Image (cartoon, rainbow, N blue to C red; front, side, top):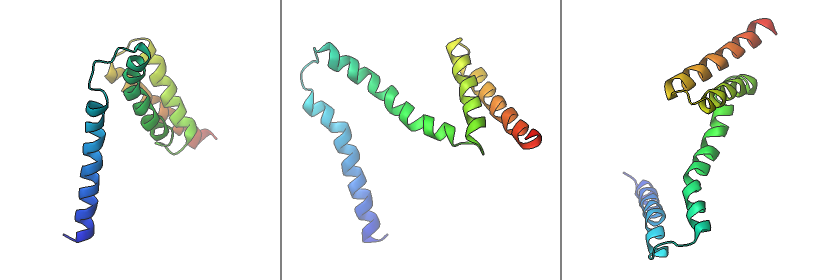
Amino acid sequence: MTVQLLAYIGVMAGVTYLVRMLPFVIFRKKIKSRFVKDFLYYVPYAVLGAMTIPAVLYSTGSIISAAAGLLAAVLLAFKDKGLLAVAAAACIAAFAVEMIMKYCI
């Protein structure tokens, strides 16, 4: 292994440790503020959405077919369908729109 690779691994280990350790150091007492509690409750969902939505929209050959799949997934998720049904419907919708665009347009 090169020294540069070991330096990269060391820096990433330090950053990962700091990110996981800092909340314990900063918030030693029980959090009483309702605003802070609500904010911290929604942070994982916001981060997951910020990471997932761009990947979803650029996952197919066209943003239109990706948006159709996303729309199908959102509609079925709001109707309380299971994860398998939502994922399958999103794939089918994206595939169908992609085929329509390929052969009809």
